Image: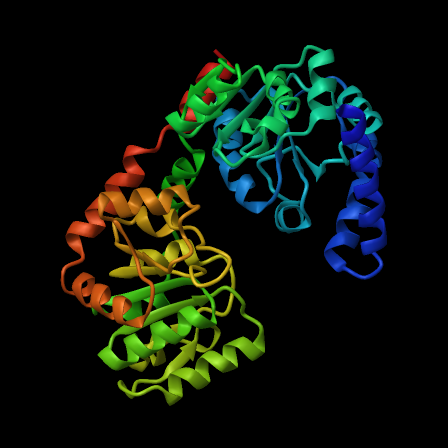
Length: 410
């Protein structure tokens, strides 16, 4: 099986090489992975003890971050190496100050894995959520390096638990311990003979609590809301915006709108939709054009920069999380941590936190505008009960970082 796997990795490498001539993301990945060993040769401190964290992309990085920062606080004698698989993670966090070294993870070939582990010599290796790289795991096991996966969430549909995936399930045995999010993951793993499992929860809860405690004061947003009830819509897409604009303008409600895409053509389209919608005559204003004076007269504040959304939620009455009419909803926890109801679209059923927020009453799913209007009317009139449920859900699930680090470094 491993021979076929390694052959597949080499085929994949060739395809990435070909794609790099036509696709910018593939080009960044190809060049970045080729530069990893040069980077390590010039930067690894041979006398240091490294803990290696690997995250596929930006979302997994956010799950690793509270662990890295708590490890830095508890064990300052260790250095941290952070690797990414995807350019969308590396390009955003390549200058992350919480790690001593940041680079791409090389492709999972036998040669790369042996060379990487030999160069870094980590004292521990920590993979996040869905990262199962057999050749690296084998290389780590050969050198006796304790290896863990954290915030893992296993599903019945994964190959490990199918008749044709029995051989592949052996890769799970290379972890010294698997820290999982729920009991169902434990049951699935036990079913294929994996017993070294701990339910620790999801470190994302720790991260959003941390973010909320460090939220920025935003005078423009505060002046915009001005004590009124307001919707904060995060990571919205065009179909989300159609619902939001119709409702907010028609009801005369203030709305902070942070679209997922902030290129000029999309911003102009949002402004056109707002200006053509029926209802409140108050204007729409972009954040970069707003002041604490002129924003008071606006009905919609469009966020046309990045890095503010997690703080903006604190100014709202109800949050709407975009993506549910497309590929899937974005981060619900960033809003729920502020004890506010979260509303989202129909494509949420593969998101564990969405289902659990619905179950506890802190999250509300909608299928169309009629449902959206009905639920928003209810929540805007009385947000306290659903908001408290959302906040309690986040707070009752925090603490995964302490459990994980306590067990690894006991």
